[in-house]
Image (cartoon, rainbow, N blue to C red):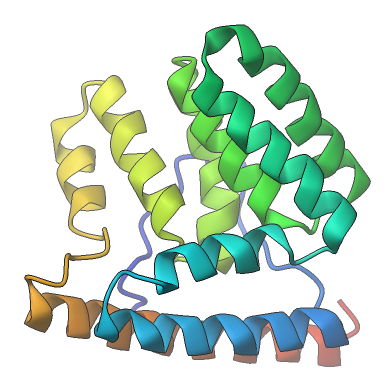
Length: 195
């Protein structure tokens, strides 16, 4: 069965999905995230905040503080975006396996109107975490900005349904859990091949 969230990549130069190396820390982080996904059937709070905390803290408190500051700067207005962009780019340079700076960088690029570049960064996140609902929202915004109604609707269908749509949300969570298991198996196989 195809992964529910997968679409053709907007970045045609990327032939293989990107997966971070499966270190012991990455494995524990993935398992924690799977538990958070399962909780999404029980309401938005506190699990949405828990996801953000989990994603931001995946590489320790120093990276978390920088990421939090940069993300806060996005919301402070355009005059703070350059600083935020510099932080995201620096975090990505320091640890290219850390997905959350890529997710937030994609969001910033979208806000700046750099839709194609945003899609490339967002796709790297979605290759490894197709349930990443912030990045799914970024993809909706990118394709809306590009005026591509068909792709906008496709990405909208992949967003996390609200609790009012319980059956759809349950299906979304089930598929996200399935995808998380499939991706973890792939990462384990790559580790076994020494990749």
